[in-house]
Length: 390
Ligand code: FAD
Ligand code: DHB
Image 1 (cartoon, rainbow, N blue to C red):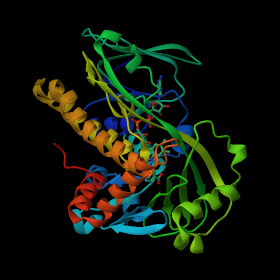
Image 2 (cartoon, helix red, strand yellow):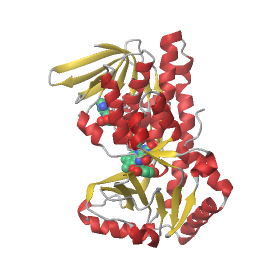
Image 3 (spheres, rainbow, N blue to C red):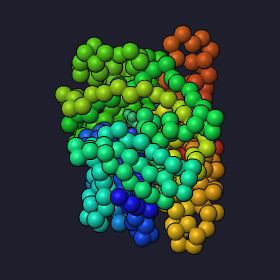
Image 4 (cartoon, rainbow, N blue to C red):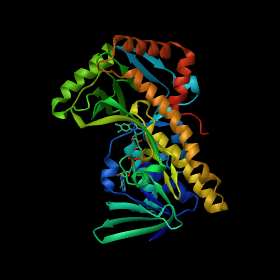
């Protein structure tokens, strides 16, 4: 098999890259380790920046998102139960859209298959070769035996636990990492969301987040210990904890019901530099992870891929390498700004066991400043809705 861009990973980054390349007349093949059903069912991100929404809409993926996505012009921050609204739209002229990663993924898969795109699912033992030569390739195994895809470039869109980044010789990659001493316990329930907008809560007992997927589907998270056992957290206990952390107003009105999904996610900040190794380019979670608090992960993956698709298009159209040469630097500039914001917001909202009382008072002062100062709210809102593309 031969293609122009061989893409490892069929998550949002790989699928969108393939879609954008197709629109530029560039051929690609996606090699994905999991099944289509698994990829479509993985519940993760929920908040799209306006830049992400605009890109999807401009490239023909906006119809269902426009019908089903929920446009939010603000978010709330609950500080020990007292709620404060940040008016994103008034402060920045922009909004965010609540539209699940599952739905973005389904729309992308449908568009790729309708356009005759190739996605190989359930590829075992995927490996990348020759990215320092002019003849890179991707190899894998299926029930039919070993397969090989020859390509001009490899795009490593295979997430944090993928194979592309670990294939780079250790001396050529530098990584930066911060692991947080807690996780998020998330539930999905067929209940009406407690509020029209998201509520991010900082409470003495820990962080909580009230989010949603639709008017009838709620997504809630609470900060939990890393060694949490789901058996210790029956739904009743989660609802009680949410009521406490979100505060009395939410507790009085929250609709509870059985969870239809329950999972734990660790929190991590991670960056690999550079994001290009010869003819292999990393994009999305393969190159960087942010803690989910700032809702940046999926949006960063989209931003990477936008720059990378432009760079490949320039190369195949004009024979220019300017775009591919500057990809890593351009992408990393945005990545580090999102790292800063996601780290900062996470640090203010979570409970750090064993921290001195002074640290909690500083958090409260930061949050008081954030919600009380127009300048601070403005800076926050600019980051939350997404910085302009550089
Ligand atoms: P992935 O989605 O991880 O896709 C990588 C793909 O590669 C997967 O399909 C995987 O199966 C495949 N793969 C892995 N290894 C191999 C291999 N060896 N060979 C072939 N294929 C392979 N982001 C936001 O922007 N907003 C949010 O609100 C938000 N909330 C989140 C909440 C939670 C609980 C979590 C966990 C994450 C959240 N994120 C959020 C982050 C977001 O989900 C990720 O940043 C996003 O999925 C990144 O997309 P990706 O395509 O780079 O990676
Ligand atoms: C969701 C996840 C986030 O990390 C976030 O900041 C906002 C919303 C969600 O899953 O709905």
